[in-house]
Image (cartoon, rainbow, N blue to C red; front, top):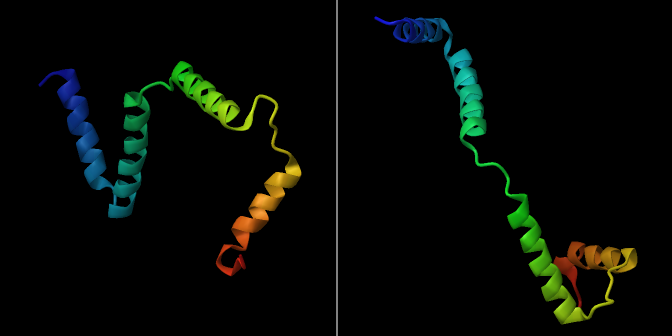
Length: 88
């Protein structure tokens, strides 16, 4: 048995000595670690490209100088919050 196999065997034995809750906790931690290792790096260039596309669509729809102010955002939130009781 080589060194790696021995270390793997030791890990398995230690895992088996944990109670069920501890095993589940460790599995959760290992899942997070595995995800971090295998996750693709965030593609900022693609993301910024999508933002530029959305901005272009908004400018085409509303005009070059259209802005959204805090009052219009509050009005929209109020309208959405009152949705089931809207009287129109």
